[in-house]
Image (cartoon, rainbow, N blue to C red; front, side, top):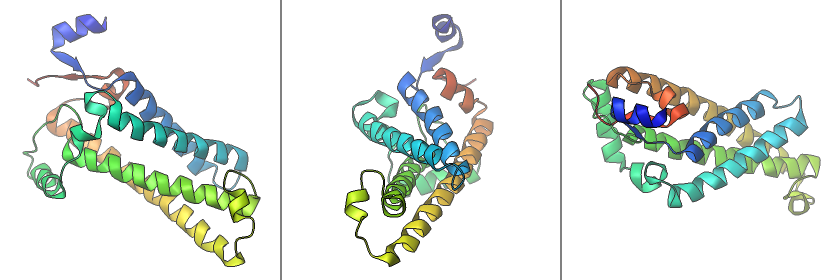
Length: 196
């Protein structure tokens, strides 16, 4: 079926299965962690560990993965990214088969924000609950450390949510401007080589 689609519709495989599974699993794990913040600590921590594992995978896959999964395919200079955003505003942005410059910048922003969120969460878990891989290191930490750790963790969790909302808006805008369903392509991995 996919082979027929590729031949008949000028579609090409862009997102490999690992990128797609990573993307949707990360979305689910982050949503779970964000929603269970204080109420279900075990589920919150498990979701956080899942996010951290996925981040580690994505960094490795960003170096050795398939063409459009690699950082070298979509990392652009800040000047190129700003020029692309100006073109988006002017409704003349170039279409990219993989991530566009703004999408590439968003990938990095999300990875960094999620890394800070999970690492501060690990530290907070070790400090407050005396659990996790950092517990021994934080067992004798000073009393004043708890509030800053909690503030950092909460700030970056909420900042990540803001980035996700901006990501969704960018996906919707690019889908409209280029008349293609980017959400569907993140499910089936396919995009049209050339648009009509």
